Amino acid sequence: MNVIVCIKQVPDTTNVRIDPETNTLVRSGVQSIINPFDMYAIEEAVRLKEKFGGLVTIVTMGPPQAEEALREAISLGGDEAVLISDRAFAGSDTWATSYTLSKAIQKIGKFDIVICGKQAIDGDTAQVGPGIAAFLDIPQITFVKKIEDIKDSFMRAERMTEEGYDIVESPLPCLITVVKEINEPRLPSLKGKMRAKKIEIKKLEAKDLDTDPDLLGLKGSPTKVVKIFTPPPRKGGQILEGEAKDVCAKLVELLKSEVC
Image 1 (cartoon, rainbow, N blue to C red):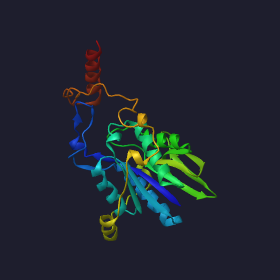
Image 2 (image 1 turned 45 degrees about the vertical axis):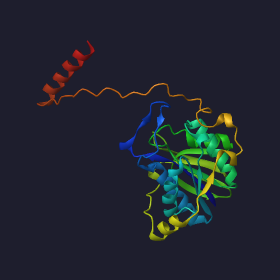
Image 3 (image 1 turned 120 degrees about the vertical axis):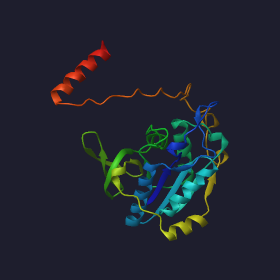
Image 4 (image 1 turned 90 degrees about the horizontal axis):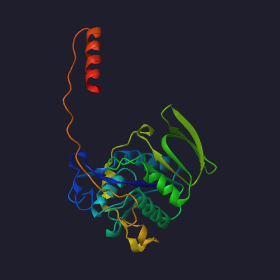
C-alpha cells in the first residue's frame, strides 16, 4: 500500500501578514505549523501502512522553510519526503497548486491512495485535494470520516455530510480528503524524531517536472486577489436581563428599531 500525503505549512494564525504588492501571504520569517487538518491525513496514512504495509511519502509545495514541516511529518511515521520549491511556483492559487502537486505525484510514481486534509486554515477553500484528483484523472472521496475497508483494489469509506454520512466505494488508485473525526493524531516518538533529523529530503524544482510554465505560479493562477482590507470592528452588543417575557419584548423593540 503506497500512500502519498499532501501537506501544507501554514502561518500561525496570530502571525498572518499580507504582501501589499502581490496580495499574497508573506511566509518568509513567519512562524509556521503543519496545517491542522493535514495532521489527520498523516495519521491515517501511517495507520494504513501499519495495517497493510507499504510506504508513506509526504509531499509539500512551498519555500525552503517548508522542509521543517516535512521533517515533523517524518517524525510522525512518514517514510519519505518531497519538497516542491521554486520561485516559479510563487503566488499559486488553488488551481496552479493542484496542477503542480499532480505533476509531482506523477513524478514520484506508483501510488494507491493520495490523502489530503479537507482544507487549509489559511486559504480555507477545500479545493486543492479535488483539484489534484481532477488533474490526475482519478476518483476522489471528500470529507472522509472513516475508511471502512480496502480490498480487491477498492476502498469503502464514510463521507461526512451535513445530515450524517454517505458510504462511498471507489476503485484504487484514488484521492481522499479527511476530516478531524477520522482519527486522533499521535505524538512523535523519539525514534521518529531522530530519523526525521537525518532523512534526506528530495527536492523538486520546475525544471524537474513535466509542466507547462504558463500554468505555474501567479501567471498560471486564474484567481486574482484585487483588494485586501481589514473589516471594521464590530460594535459592542448589549445583554438583556430580566424575566423572559420582558426580555423578549425588549428584543423585539430593538430589532424593529434596527430594521426601521
